[in-house]
Image (cartoon, rainbow, N blue to C red; front, top):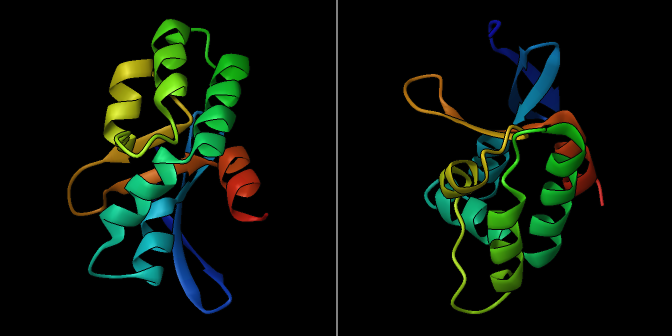
Amino acid sequence: MSKNRKLDVQGVSITMYKHDENDFISLSDIAKHRDSERSDYILQNWMRNRSTIEFIGLWEQFNNPNFNSIEFDGIKIQAGLNSFVMTPKRWIEQTNAIGIRSKAGRYGGTFAHKDIFLKLFTR
């Protein structure tokens, strides 16, 4: 993993890092920009959206040979229901995802592969 670098997007500082020649962009920074006190809820709400789950699942199926498609099918059925709760960490653990990454600690946060980030945040 290479060193984090900062991007300035319309006055918002967003962290980006490179892993195995792939760029990952901080979802946490965007969530904090929207609501600095409740950024974790913003990420959870984004992750419980059916279209989000379907897109990141499809991305994983194309890009991740170790993706747990069986677990994904169960998640996809529940996505969008009022009782459905999904976090980035849970998504990664249950599906063996590589397109969403969570890093703990001082320089941590939740990051998305640039393809996922661009599709979901440039609508």
